[in-house]
Image (cartoon, rainbow, N blue to C red; front, side):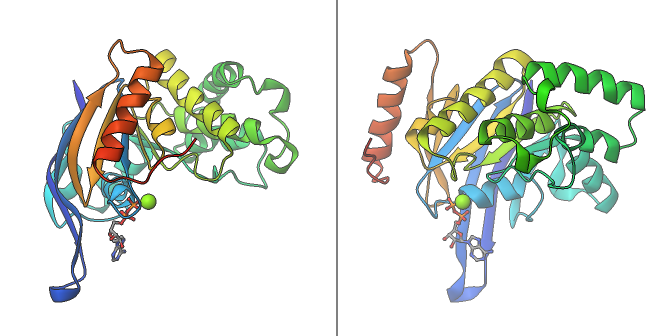
Length: 253
Ligand code: ADP
Ligand code: MG
């Protein structure tokens, strides 16, 4: 089953001679429990694309289906429901609230939708254990390590069991060790919880953690590869080759 389906999505900013086609006729689908990364150089349209799916921005034309519902035609009420129930985010700076404890941050999406207390406790208990954050649950974000903040943010994105988890350059502010840890967490959420994940990045290493990579250039998808049963290093090589062939940023390890 397809969780996400884009049909000929276009986004144009500005008018006349000043117009920029940030997204130029993009179509693709994401199946349930897939982990897809969209890779492209700076300015290729990655953030615009995610913002359209997140309904932070509005398409110029085309349609976007999530769970079979065209989100480009929703009214205010249905849009609010969609944002609350269907999508989860892992932000670059994690967006944890400093005045709330780790526990309170994680259950916030449930509290906001008036989930019964018993259900909140049950869900939270499970997820705290899974992400190994039980010992720090009563601490505040500034009292915990970067890795613990990552796990807290991932737990919060997962707790409502959203149809789609999105991330825009999630490792953009991290060193290579923490980038790796975060991508492993996303892999874990995908493999163990069946979370459907769509992440965008300009980094081939980050892209290589997915099951499928879409390559974006000038607002268009120009290639796509599947991990399949390929070894990690083979898949990574393929990503590098396609990226280089398309004139993407040279990658130096
Ligand atoms: P990426 O995330 O891949 O770096 P973006 O989606 O941010 O790319 O941008 C794609 C193109 O659209 C760029 O040329 C950018 O300058 C342009 N763009 C993005 N947002 C806006 C905006 N709000 N107004 C005008 N142009 C924009
Ligand atoms: Mg961007």
